[in-house]
Length: 126
Image (cartoon, rainbow, N blue to C red; front, side, top):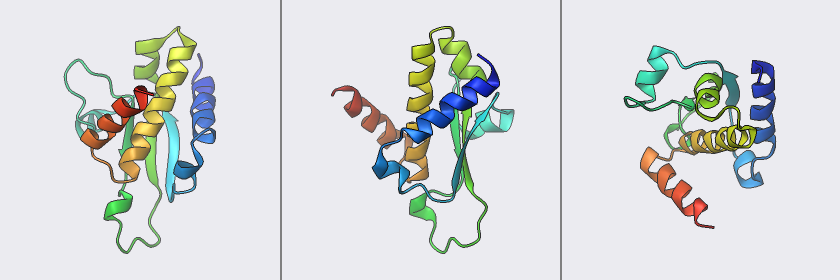
């Protein structure tokens, strides 16, 4: 898979977001990046032996207050770790990209890691 193809899958995942998420995304850009930086790894708190598939960089909705003329927040979806973990199973790659986009959007809306993990577990039950 080329990086361009990965970017297309990320764009498709964003285009297929449930309306209740998509309509409330404000001042945030969702992009594909190749690998997380050392700073990303530290900020994303990826533990030893874990991959960092995505990272939210910004001010969550719940902490915005007077939020005028701010640069867009950014959600980065990392191609290298996802492809390393799931390639060549394209269905698994697509599912992980979608799950990562949803996970990072949870942070954009102000959810903690624990809240997101609980929501992910509940979603898998259905």
